[in-house]
Length: 552
Image (tube, rainbow, N blue to C red):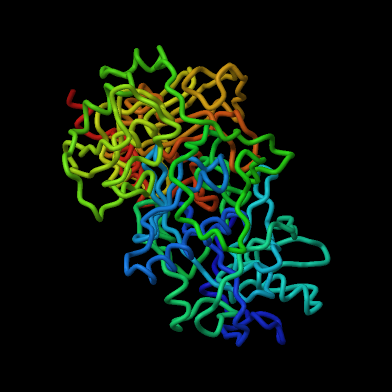
């Protein structure tokens, strides 16, 4: 689909539309919407129940900090709101979401909207992606569309919101103003977003430079995840809708739905939450709302167990895989930990016992033991690291939750398959001086092993064989060799939930982006893209695959 060109559009929204220009509301009732930023620079709202949990922990932390003079809680475990989100942690000081099993980091922001807006009513507007799934608009666009609908507009121009599209409410379609390509849109009712007190007049239009927008729409540091040259910065005024055909489960077409994984339940005590808060938390053991019923049942809340390591992973990794052995190999015990430092895994003080003491048992690692990683020197409860390792791939490697340093050789859960490579003389756009490398991945359906989310259950393999392309120059050949290493380490694909179709137990991409189109980059998955090779090298490095691997 053609990229949006809203920044260069001279079109304005319909006259009389309340949200067609920046403005502020005097209504002090507000709702807080937490959003994460995907690899295309778009903000995706967490679902209403997840936002309620994040906001409740955030507000309780603020109240406690005001009473005691201490700082905010350092991190929030999303698995407490939805078991499907167990691998994800929000680091509040840096406003960053961290995925513990892959090391992926994404910016996070908190934005306040009027209580009578679409967010306050739980109304979400979505557009249909290439696979037939539904992708949510950013929340400020949802509010803009809902205001237009409420004022009986039959059609609205999204140019003021940074999109090169117009939406027809009667036909329920979105049309690209340049290419005239049409997509279906829909209005969906979700759980309302959490109510909070607003310290200033609320913003009602597109982002501006007022104090409220600065204070309540902050983001974490710009990461290396922006892989497309036209949208390399989070605040770019040009916003893209792209095909999701090669997207992995990290970004979601239904709010935020990464793959099913057993939850790290009991990650911290609930005593830090404000028991008097009126915001409802999901009931422990209740059904997950991360996926709709039509997309299957989410993983139940399970305690951390110590299963025997996978024989497949033992064959792949040269290091021991017994959980206690791995933790003790890379962490040295610290005597007398600092009293004011938190463990970012369980969010308890390092001077207090681990929050996993009730759910993760070990004969050799006690809840009060604190360890320091040998290279990066970051400290955690050793039992927390044991629980994190036991809930992951158990391949003999550890990854620091703070800085992502990898200890050992990281391997993944990619099913058995075949990787084929060939070359041909035709050039890729942007690389006219060389031919093309074609990679073909073959994976067939099968049965999940002990390292997968649901051992013993079948998994599907949609869209295979998958064809990918690199320029046949020096850097392209280097990327190819590193992709060979990643393939051997089972890092390119995994078994999880598709963000485009919502199907669980299927083969999906695993955080190493590939170009699946040759002649156009309208979808974001083709050429030209001058930053792609550098960005994919950074993604490979985040998985522990670097040039050092080629020298071994």
